[in-house]
Length: 439
Ligand code: MEV
Image (cartoon, rainbow, N blue to C red):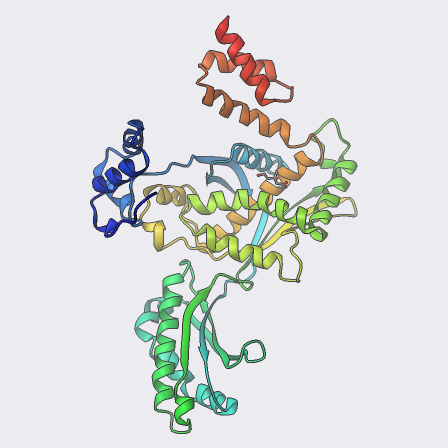
């Protein structure tokens, strides 16, 4: 049984490693070496990473790949992607190339409003609360001046504050529902700082509001926090072409492919079991770009899935149609992203990723990310409705199996040749590897 440890965060990094090794890897002399093998020789770079979080003991690598040939609004992008899942980058690149030859992707940002709330309890007359709110609303905004000056200069800031009565759902529960424009920043710090100031002013003004009774003066602020649900921070991306241009796969006629594809999307629209996997595939592309560009993939995931369920049933984020001989495929989703602040200024690879994208604004990044999701979904549905996904997946998986077995380049080539065009079955790969070694 492990014993609790006090003051772990105060230990040096070496002491933390020593504790982990002594506690979990007594019999494994490789553990310490492995942990340290991932340390970077560049001390400054290592220190930077150590300080991102608490209790860092080592680094955890993800592959950083690029998917070239993304034509978005007539501009060519090479999209950086950080992801461990084999075949995601390959699928993105393939879809990008496919649409490059058919006019590329069109994307537009529909709205950029972000939201935060002060959640509080109020025990008293509702009309008096409304009057109080109307009286102090200008002061709520005034008191955030120090926080908002720079954002306002750039054209952003607080858009509105509304008092919302939620007492039907929870006794005595009210909100200050606040909307913000945070421009190129994701805006979490800005929004949370504003909200905490609203809460402070709201509480102190209530205490001196003469119309309130003693009970009413005691506004009970429960918490102040931004919302990752951003249904008014929406981007749309689209591809379209003549049905007859869907002619890359010789094994299926363009009309049949278009119809099967539309049906696959319709299934994801009405069947939650399928919708979750369908959207997971979309998030393969989205998360990879979000991670590479230093954005918060948990925030995006939470917001996107809530949006996918906004009608009361979880549904597809993408849509497709065939009308008058034109195939159209599009995505609409909420994305609260930043291209300044946070990790974007700190992580050297994030900076590099953003430079590769030619320093996009947050709006441009929203478009690129939405396109990455749409492309990923196109690639997945294209495989699923024609060859099935295992063919492509197992090809990449084959390399993972061979790497695990420690195969040499020569052995990899021979085994890959053998499985070319065939279904890759794990046990068969292992058998062939051992046979090769034996001979
Ligand atoms: C696998 O990571 C993603 C897919 O399952 C997505 C889908 O089914 O649409 C291939």
